[in-house]
Length: 566
Image (cartoon, rainbow, N blue to C red; front, side, top):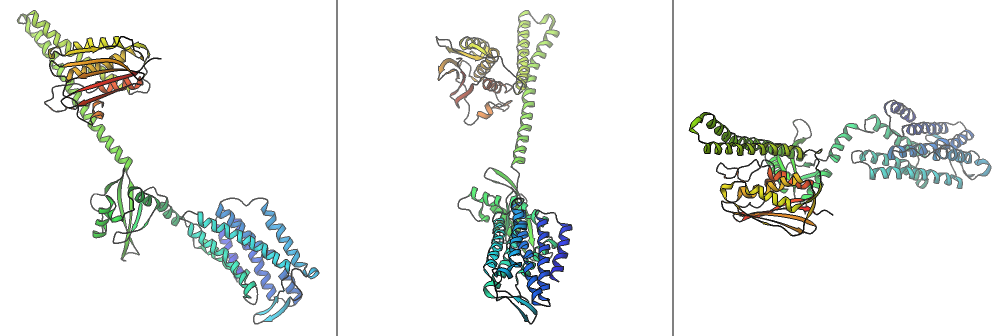
């Protein structure tokens, strides 16, 4: 009956499973059937001679069964093929030697001794063996095989993913059952049906494993998928009781607790998550706002009630923290981009409107004034229109430069340039800016020429932007000081004004495109907000830098530094 059950379930396994080591498992069932068949024949043998012969040939199944079992565990638990050299040794050499020693025991009396008897008990006749030294050699070999299988199963328990560890616990226990039964027989004289219980214990082990297969527990894909999501998820997951205390955490949650607080706090007191857990425990639902920040990461909190069934008492909650840091940063960038676009439109529309108004007004007066506009007035109107046209041209050029400088294909023609003359020319151009403000300039240049590798046109543009900025924010009659000097292998141009200064922490805004510190309607200095942004881009491409030192009400010093040419 036992053999029939195991064989039937083995056929089911063969048709429904494709796991590593399955062929060894099926061979173990065949060996089990062979052994059980020999035990049955032995118990029903009509004579001692027949019983003795059957018990000795039964060693074929007795040796092959634990061998196939060990091979199955090796391939299943370790995910590797059994070494090729080990296969013939385990399934041919060892069974042949041990079975030969058992079959020929009448000649040498070393496997079974002369005290081997055929007895009759309540359950029928059976062989009572007198074990000789070769028997214990064979048993030692079999115990080594079973111990190897136990080591493999135990190693799998230790290293297995938590999602499948429970199955390896069962395999390990099933491996130990035959060993325990055989020890009970040899050391304690325990028998089953007046015979060695080892084959029946192996049948029990195989039946347990086949039952796991039949019960869909060999690899319960659904259960493993759920546990893999819990243990391997990068999102922290907490299992909490109805009072809000953590019962279990997945590795990501445990790492979050350790990383953000030392010592690890109670979940109810853990950062921004604590109030949500307390709210959940008190009211049985999440608050309206569940977005929290822990450290530098942002999370959306989700909670699912745990109960034993519909209408049953609630036993806790599964709380998952979905990491939305990337989405949060993307949203912030989108908002910043939208704000920048709005600021760009506002800035550009204003910067376009002002000179266009001047140009239109001047052209209107010139076209409609006739003889009422004298030559001096005409010259002044033409001058204002020309100046406004230059402003529009600069704005368009700045927009084009901003686009081109952000392109990876943009390149510059770097060549040796003397920086002193470039500074002098830039100061001369700056003196013509806003002449009505009467800005004074002081230029200090060294006697030694400082040569740098630069694109002359782009460096002139960078110098113009910094000087224009100094003029724009200087008070009428103010002083702009320019100096050029050598410092630590760098040529450094400094431009100091006596204007309103820059508040602390505004560097990102100063060098951002389309950005102005004073965006109020009462501001006195206008511009596209592109000059200093373009200047930084140019200096970055020259392996240099532009920086500033400032204080509100004191003034600002900008410095442009470039590596000296070798």
